[in-house]
Length: 194
Length: 163
Image (cartoon, rainbow over all chains, first blue to last red; front, side, top):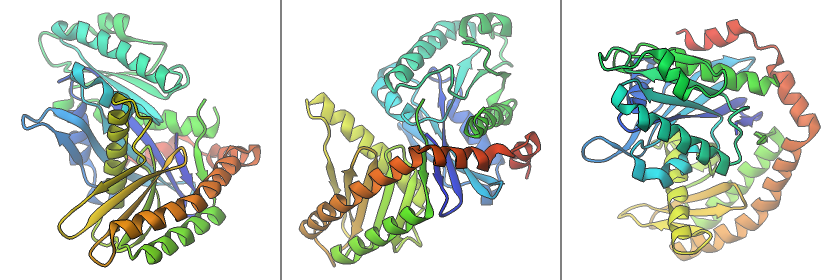
């Protein structure tokens, strides 16, 4: 749920990047961090293992500017993708205003994508968040790899119900901001009451 | 559909006054109120060198993880957490259904004093937060929120991402 503070004229929203392990969730956030001006971003926090796998979450606060006099802040979180961190993933998803599902386009990861999507739907249900009204986008990452499946096939397995889909190469920054922008837009539109 | 958390100026000032009183009564360095999702709500004290957004996000993660642990051993939650440092210590306390109150203190205070004062402040804070929730959920507040965003155009949204 968004937090609106009329006293300080701020609106704070939480966006969670979900998806299978090594799919590029942290890479998305790192690219956003690198490409955002110092004034607009806060500290990037990564709670990672010694081998740089996300242990609990990555966190990046962004303050993108004012909209109708309200300072708009987005708090970006990633979940740990590895299957056994399920409890942590559920904790992070709580209170999300928007979700990005980062799918790994490689053929060998199709099953992991489907499992992770199913896991996300269960966790949302547990938090009483309805995917149908939740601002949500699907990102098909790693489009540059020769082992990637055609987008149509991925859509057939992963598309939920008309959500925006973005093809991305997060390591090169391709599609990263488009995805973030789409979810941010959906969140603000929801607040607008549409 | 979950409701957003809407804080108006009047309640915000009351919360600020209450946490400032807690800071003085507990001899704390900092008192910080956040919601369980990691959004900072209000803070007071020596915050010059601490990033409030990072503090809120990590504290919420800490409380959430501890709550997970509590449930594993058959408890609903561990309502109070204490982290002891060489110089500064942190006391985190779950207040009501959705807030976390942090007191950061040094040798000028003690855990006993902080716990006592937090308990007293929490008892005052809970009805105040319930009032915030009631008002935020009211129709008038939702109408005000929608009105605040009604004029947003695609150009406004594009402008947010262009710097």
